[in-house]
Length: 592
Image (cartoon, rainbow, N blue to C red):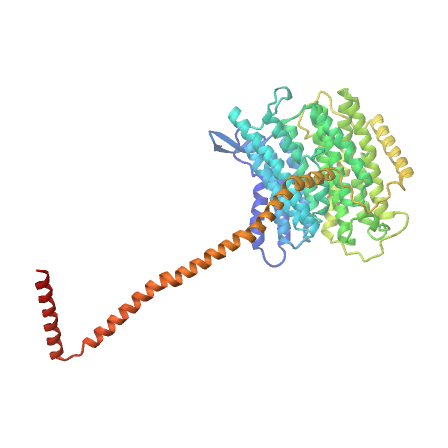
């Protein structure tokens, strides 16, 4: 069905991004809420169909493919944009808001894109907007991290571009449809690699824990919601049922929590947990059953809410205390009680505690893996759940808000009211979805033979056992996982080795050749040029100047003679004429 009555959510965000630099005075920050409200209204009122079809290369580029899959992702994107804008209202730096608007607009554009070329265009818009959310923290670390982040996503975008162009050459279409793994061609694998970069699939994930902790306080809240979840959407749309994703997702889930358990930086811990939690989604998509795909979508929805709340809580710590390192914090429970309460709502949600939304989404993916007889994958996801509660549910709040002794005695910067509002909205939704799963389940995209029921005795008991075991593990390991100042390089270690290798093999030889050429030029080339210059000066002085000056002197002498001849007396002119006549007569006589 082709529709013509759909307000694309990207339009309002792009309009605000263009207009925001021209606003003056006070009160403009309330306009930040307008695009999210319009987006929520548009998404909850639109009918499924095709909107905004533009002709290009004998086919249509689709800006608005609206179906159950795009709607459920767009819903949570819109809700999170409202939460994020509330949280960021106090920020006076308009550049941050412009970058956030471009970033969110790119996310909506990818979700509603009906073809790969449109996906690529909005994909790159997201990359640009999110890069500036890192740059605008305006520290040396953030500048370097921003460049690394942009480099990663540029490479990922090039894989995507190469794949879609080669696919167009082979098939003559940009259509974004599901690709069966058995019939996949090399260009499909290129597209998949491009998507996996944004999904932070191990080992393509190092950009995430590198950049997110160094972004702005509010910018990282937006970034944790859109980049990886947009990648989850496109993987679900185009690559469901690919076995490689099932395995890669399980590896991500376990790998992320292992590194989170040893990290010291609060936002770096949460960044590794994005890798882990996205692993659940990627694994569900890869398994490819109705329950696991719905579980992946539900978990993406829930994850955006509780992960945004986690980053907002960590952002409050950074905003108030000026640090996000756990070894420098502690004893803040009495000084920041509401931050602790709201953070713990998110921490229990991500841990899968009953009553919170992580419980109704994470268990669906694990149960789906077990029902599909993927026992090892289900076991890996359960192990990751243990690490999640240990690191995010216990370690981070323990050392930030309690700890063995109060360690942070400095002044705390007052937290603006709007930051609390944004956190409260996210916290309320985490609880509401956990208590009433139908709020979320009603929008899941794939029809199932039987509706998944999370509130069973077994699921509650299973969650309780996992959380209890996690708490016991933390008790025995509390001295082992004490935060340390050391930076864990992860796969950055290998990237740095590659960088050193490139320097050793390419850059340093080229630099050596350049140095030798510089010396040769200084010894021979420069002296030769100076000799040529000296010869040119001599020729100009003794050659050109002599001719020109001699001509000038001759004209000058002739002029003097002519001036003397012109005396003004008639008898002199008659005598001169007679002399000239005699000369002419003599010449004619002589020659004749």
